[in-house]
Image (cartoon, rainbow, N blue to C red; front, side, top):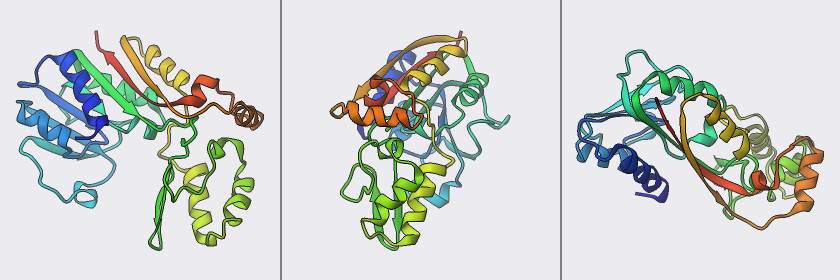
Length: 251
C-alpha cells in the first residue's frame, strides 16, 4: 500500500472507527490494496466509480465485495447505494468540476458519513502539468528523467512558447503535439489551487473537518511573477502546495 492509500486509510479509521458493515464509494476507484483491505476488515461493499471499464486498466484479482461502475463522478449512478464514506485517492487533481463532484458525493452519503479526498500534484505547483504519456516506447513522466517541462513551465510558458521549448529538445513533432494537448487542453485536470479547492469544500454547506497540505520545492518568486504575468493569479502558498487531503462530514 503506498503512502497515498495509507493517508486515506488513516482518516477513514479516525472517522469511521471500524469498517464492519460499511459501504464505501471510491471515486476513480479500482480493486486497490486499500479497497481490498477495507473488505478484509469487514466492509460490506466497495463501489469503484471510474470512467474506464475495469478490464481496460486492471488485470489483477477482484476481491469479493468490490463492484465496478463505469460512470462519471459528476453524475453518480442512481443504482449506487447510500455510503458511509466517499473516497478519492490520487484523484482530486483529475476532478475538473469539484463542486459538482462534492454535491454528487453528498447525495450518495448517509448522514454522518465522510468524504475523504486526496490529490496531487496540484495544478499551480512546480509539477502541476502532471504529464504522463508513453509515445513510441518513450515515457514522459512528471518529475522524472523523462519530464520535458521546466518547473512551473505550464504556468510560465504560453502554449506557443512551450512548443518552442520542446522542439529545441529535438522531440518528435507528434510527441510535442501530444504533450501540449495533454498539458494545455487535457479534460481530466482540476486547474484550481489549494486556496480555491479549500473554498470549494467550505462552500458545499456541510461540516468541513479540515485539510492537510504538503509543500515541496524551493520558492522561485521570479517564476511566480512570470506566471502571474501570464494570468495565473495564485499565491506563493498555492505555487508551493504539492498535494492535499480534505475531509468533509455530512450533517
